[in-house]
Amino acid sequence: MRVIRFSADGFRNLKEISLEFDPELNILCGRNAQGKTNIMEAVWLCSGERSFRGAKDKELIGADADRMALLLDFEDSRRTQTVSYSMLRRDMKNKKLELNGVNVKTPSGLFGAFGCVVFTPEDLELSKGAPDNRRGFIDLSVSQLKPSYRGVVEKYRHILDQRNLHLKHIGQGRPDDGMLDIWDMQLAQMGSYITVLRYNYCKKLQRTAEKLFSELSGGGEELVTEYHSTVFRELDGRNDYRGDLFGEYIEKLTAGRNEDIRAGFTLRGVHRDELKCSINGMNAKDYASQGQHRSIALILKLSQAYILSEETGEYPCILLDDVLSELDSVRRSFIMEKIRGMQVVITCCEEETVKGCKGRFFRVEGGRIVS
Picture 1 (tube, rainbow, N blue to C red):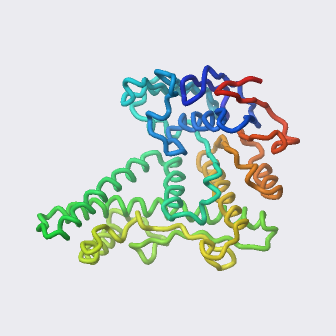
Picture 2: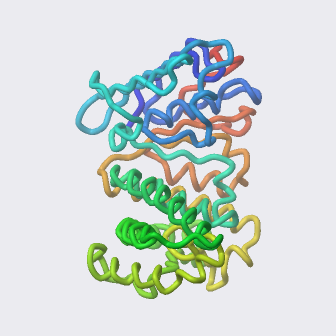
Picture 3: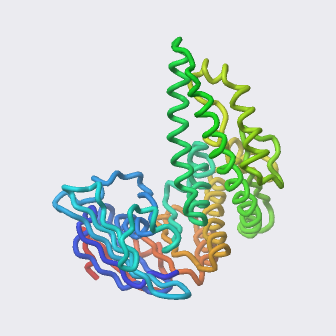
């Protein structure tokens, strides 16, 4: 998977930029707040994913622009494809999205076409941050392999909100009108499905991450990543999310109703599950050093890229947004070695960060490419 060319106008501070990408290494260099990360974000959006900054649509159009337009040409092992993404300030709900000239209703319709993996400084907190960050990492990784998965996760969150609201009403003295049974059925159906896909992905993650972490640590440390469910005691070998797992999920929700009503929200379910990491048998969240946390985060993101490549047969495009400057020389060299052969886009403030790297160099100033 390689970007051939990319253009953007009106996206945040970007103005009429056009880039011809090198098939291997591309370096975006410039001072802070010049537009380097905006380019990364725009390329990422062309994969159909949400902004990795958590931005809303209104934030994507530049303050002095009426519209934003992105155009990305990329190639895989079979053909060249084009993603077109535009939006008017006066009508932001109606984005214009096209894949190879064919209209796409929503950004998720682009899933599976252009594959890329983004690594930001915030990702360095992946192993020690909130569990929701790790759940989000798994959900993103799974959705890249199974595009329909994202829709199920969003429906689950909507039903969960409805159930939690109903629990609060019951806790305030309103009678249950039978809706709790309906919410439980739907949560169990979607929750069982999400659990199976997450668990199966995490098994692949463990195999890949263990090997990479051992290489990074010179064989001195062992990383174990495990998916912990708040519903199921045992998941190995279980895939019947319509039958056996669904039944167990329903039982767990029913048994915990009184506790949920007292709390005012749902205490068990995939929304409370966790990806736990340990080094040499010690819980990383509690005992890992800052350097070990960074190593875990690095390995998780590398594993995401490797699994995506193995499952799709295509190397993803790698976006490293100001990450190299946050890593020491050992981890920096490791990541560059492990993504060799993939197309890489790097942002940096100082040329010293990428000293010795051979590729195409772009200097970014004021939202424009100046050299």
